[in-house]
Image 1 (spheres, helix red, strand yellow):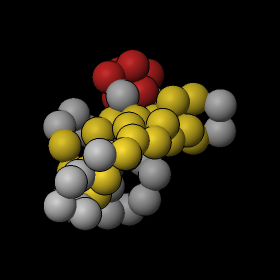
Image 2 (cartoon, rainbow, N blue to C red; image 1 turned 90 degrees about the vertical axis):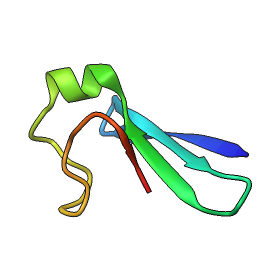
Image 3 (spheres, rainbow, N blue to C red; image 1 turned 30 degrees about the vertical axis):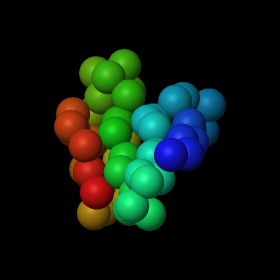
Length: 53
């Protein structure tokens, strides 16, 4: 399983994980959700808590 820290400008936006099955999951960082609730990475991934796959 591999992981990548994803930044938006200089702020940690979240963690992208490649699962053992080859799928990808993204989780926004809690601080990012709290501080930047309107600064989403893409239109299909609005800022929220929880895992997106």
